[in-house]
Image (cartoon, rainbow, N blue to C red):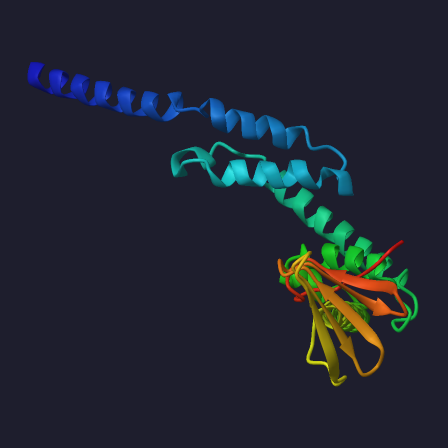
Length: 232
């Protein structure tokens, strides 16, 4: 009889401990913070997006043995669904504001596309005018590409023009015939004359000046590699 009582007492203690362990378990500080934030969601607007997405991230980080304490999860899920509906309506409205696809502005198209791109696949399927948005995005991208190519071509043309101008300032093989030269022993310079009437004087150190009728038109300081217009 006594053994039975002892045995029954032991079983009662074990049962009590098990009940205590089950009943005493509770949400930790991190989990309680998620619960409290869900309770504070209130009315859902587009401005609630950042907060709702943040709560979902924090909930997904909870350990498996803590998620069971979040008894208001349905409130978060309802808020997410409502936010999704608002974003879909917003996207539809922005696409309607685009107007004619051919004349659509890049800014309005990019704004609508940004919202569309943030939607889930299910939400995108509910954007009733998404085909118009895709067509406008394609048109804007093509226009932007054409503008970039035109700018690149203009830049290339300008660069080529500068290069051509620079090349023309350099000394090139002349078709005019040299008709004479005179070396001045006093200055160490040489005077050249050409068939077109041009005269060129060089000092033997790479410096030279040339012109016609006694007037200097251009000069060089690098042995004739580059000629500069002479200014009085």
